[in-house]
Image 1 (cartoon, helix red, strand yellow):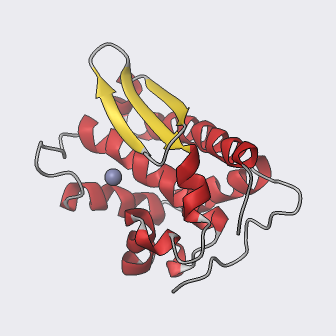
Image 2 (tube, rainbow, N blue to C red):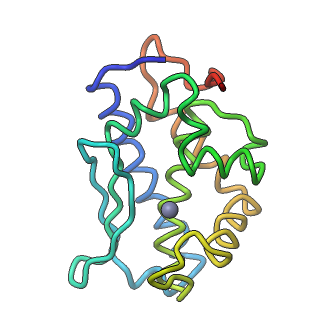
Length: 168
Ligand SMILES: [Zn+2]
């Protein structure tokens, strides 16, 4: 599945909006989260990550090239997020643009919650506390909420968000 840079930017911008919404939802459930400011941005490259800055709070970057790369044949399953979906049964292990990008939002936002609840240390990032947070999001059905909004906001002509991404 190929999309233009402009379309990838549109999807990455949607991921920013969805992360901001998730932050609002989670801040209501977990009061420590309401004390952190979340900023989101679209990056030009592949890099998709969450970083904490002393003054600004948490910053999540969604890479435009990440969006393009995830849609290439066989690529989604090579990203850590795709491997998690397959190994842990997130979205029943079904990789589509809608599920993959929703999971990317949940994954990056889980890092915010991980840091704020003390589950992260220098040498331990994708650890048990991190996956406990992600598992909770799925148990709370937040993944379907994110996906429903993504379907609505990221809609593009001639692009099926629910089409299965090919595996290799
Ligand atoms: Zn991560």
